[in-house]
Image (cartoon, rainbow, N blue to C red; front, side, top):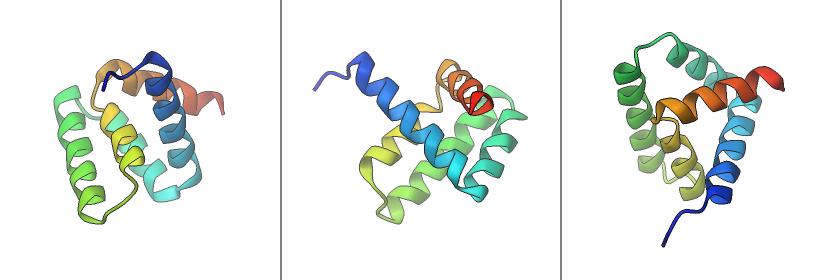
Length: 83
C-alpha cells in the first residue's frame, strides 16, 4: 500500500495533537528538540517500541515513527509552536 501525501499530513496532525494534549509527551518532545538528529531518532524508535509493546493504536504508532525523519520533526515542532 502506497502512503499518500494526505495520509502523511493527517498522521503528522494527529501526532501533534496528541503531543499537545499530553504533558508527558509534550515534555518528551521538547527534550527531543535538544538532541542531535541521531539521538532523537534513537529515542523516537524507543518510544515506538514501548507503544507497540503496550498495544497502542497502530496509526498513532505510525504517526510517532514519522518523527524520526528530521524534516517531519521540524514540521511538527513548527506546528506545535503555532497552536
